[in-house]
Image (cartoon, one colour):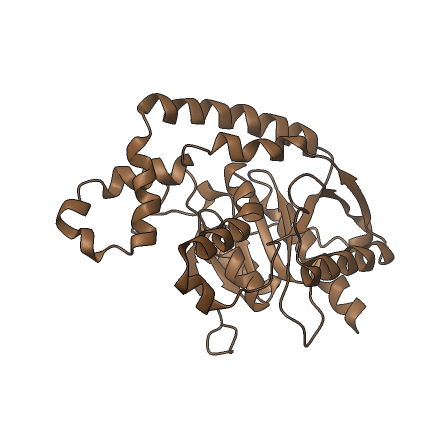
Length: 288
């Protein structure tokens, strides 16, 4: 995709696996509301969180791919950016930003404000609860272990050790842990949706870092899991929300790619896509 060899790429997003590579490569990645696109035929990681979606070169292409995958027509109001009311959550999403990410995000917000967008900072304190809610492993650990649990004995050597380690976290989760997580998620989503009400979308950096060098991550489990956690932090919040999100490039030409994530709650896919079209156009005009 980044080299121009493909028009689009299909994949799945359970905690950011479409939006993260899109952000790191200067591409567009749209994660729809999970239930909107069928997952039949895909091996599950998490039946609760998995979303079938695509990486594209533009928001318009993302809309086309979503219409094909979801077998539905997207309804666009085609609002200008000056008609948008957007929020920047200050809890969690802005923590520990690498300087290139912070600079690109701040410049993008300034460009959108100059174009007339109404942008407010809001706390969204519920985001701070995510680590504790998923401390036991979360849906991915429990549900991937349910699918894989009979295979390690026969095929254990075929599993990547780092993948196997994450799957096996689910082995220690009880049925009560899993049910309690489902209840806690419902309450958390209700609090988040109430706090987000009245905004067309949220704006955050897709990930807090630029693409890390590969060699140190291969050599060290500690470095790998630290980078993995950093990359997953922001996008995975949207999966837990059962929401939808689009990552689009917001860096200046000639600099390391940085993604801007436009996101909202469940079944607000068309509003996010509509806002993303306007934001993409405003950022392009700002660069010109």
